[in-house]
Length: 278
Length: 145
Ligand code: SF4
Ligand code: SF4
Ligand code: SF4
Image 1 (cartoon, rainbow over the protein chains, first blue to last red):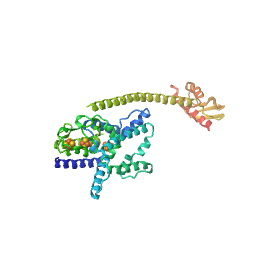
Image 2 (cartoon, rainbow over the protein chains, first blue to last red):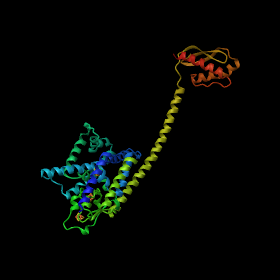
Image 3 (cartoon, chains in turn brown, purple):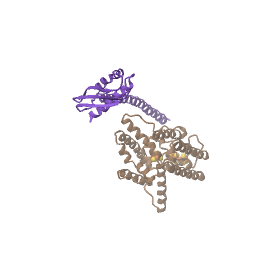
Image 4 (tube, rainbow over the protein chains, first blue to last red):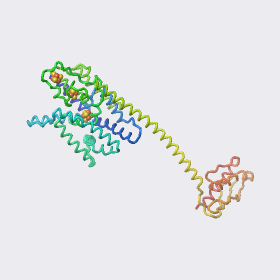
């Protein structure tokens, strides 16, 4: 493992995440709003509008199919929040000298299925005419209010409680929400991702007993084990930079500084389109 | 590779279904818009017809009104009976008889519609017509009070 490369990419990622957090803290909820909007429109027999929400959503779908879930790994404010809370929690755990109990990988894999139930439930509720209720009890609504410096109203108490629980969960596990609950993540993980956006692992050269890539993966992925689960990968590249044998890389991009340049380009494309084109 | 192909096919199916839904919904919306337009047109026409049919309520009695004809003042006398115009007579006018006769076609029109608001001047006797219309409005205004 190249320590310098590892650290460079780690800080690069934090910088990109902060920039996106400040510039577009609600891109994820805008994108998902398109799904709710469509469910409501179809339930009323109306036309699907080409609204700004729909544009963001469709663009992210296309982007994700080509580049993988780069949006999740680097740009989504809620995902970043999960990273940061976990970082702080780890720091405190180290200082205090006590460890929080962790969820075993096996259990986590089953819990990951919850997000499809969440997605289905939201779509069904919107279809049945409860879209107002969904928005009100959504933790995302409360989150966007808070980062805009506003307090949630009393009607959003459910959303506020859920948000609090999610924040606690994030302290236990990196990407708690993304792994188990995010309905947008559920859609992303079902997309066919082209080879250009997939992490490839050459396991022939693996050190015996090493499972660092799996242990470090925020989504509990064991690359090359089950193709169906690879939609969970959020392109964070931690496995790639952490592997002592350098045997994991992104698609056709050479691992190392070429990949760093590509990361910056991906971020720039995402920023440019979301901010200035749509 | 297998997962990729299956996912790709599924997403194509979803996209196709949404596309088909959208085309149907679009033509449906267009049809609805056309129907709405027709409905609006019909209501408008019906309202107009109703307004035309509605006879303004006049009080019974005889009323006089005056206007300015071709060569000076023109007076009409209207008789209202049972709330409707029963007779109109040009009482005095300085206009030529020929013009007055030409314009007096208006009187029947006014009797029929019950108001002098929407009758047009008879061409060839425009000024006399205008005088009559003006005088009728004047008289009916009084009758309507
Ligand atoms: S899974 Fe959801 S919350 Fe997590 S980064 Fe992706 S869109 Fe954001
Ligand atoms: S650690 Fe690797 S496999 Fe896991 S999410 Fe990050 S890039 Fe994907
Ligand atoms: S970190 Fe690298 S060497 Fe270790 S198991 Fe993963 S791919 Fe193999």
